[in-house]
Amino acid sequence: MAAVWIPIILSIGGAIGGAGTWLYQQQQAEKKEAARAEQLAAEKATAEKQLADMENARLWREYLVKIEMALEANRLVAKELQADFTEPNWGILESYVIRVRRDGQQRHAQLYGRIARLVQDNAKIVDLLVAYRPYVLNEELPPQITAFKEHAERYNDRWLAIQSVIESKEQLPYATPFPEALTAAVAAESKLRKPRPPPGVNVPAQRDKL
Image (spheres, helix red, strand yellow):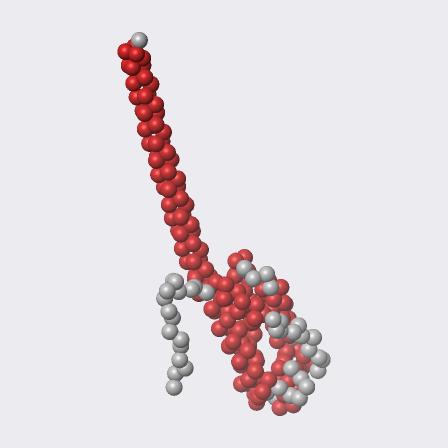
């Protein structure tokens, strides 16, 4: 009787062993598949980050660096005009009107050129800000873009009216103030976009040139 059961038991044992081997192989295959999927996900995340970093660098170079430089140049020109050419208690354009009425246009050709440059710089800044606006990350920047655009357009309108105002002895239209928070908002945006060195890479501090 035992002889009858031995082949059956061996057959069942073989089947169980085979099932165990298949199950082990299946588990190993699933682990490999999971590891492969994880690797692909990591590679995809790395590629996406690289693309994002490249786009950040492009936007920083093409727009934000130029905007910051233009704003600084604009500030220096305005500061120079206010220090050297403005009449007491009057703005730049009002001072030009006062001086031309008093001394004639030829004596203030330099002032005319500086103001014309300021108007042109304003227009360049507006173009850069408007072009960059769809990419803004810092929510504080869009209102400042709008405010500067209004300021620049108003300044241009007042500048175009200068000759008529001088001849008619009327007053210039009221100005729209420069948005003082714009520079800080652009700097914050630039900080978000500016490329960062890879981990472990130390960037030497810049020293002032003598």
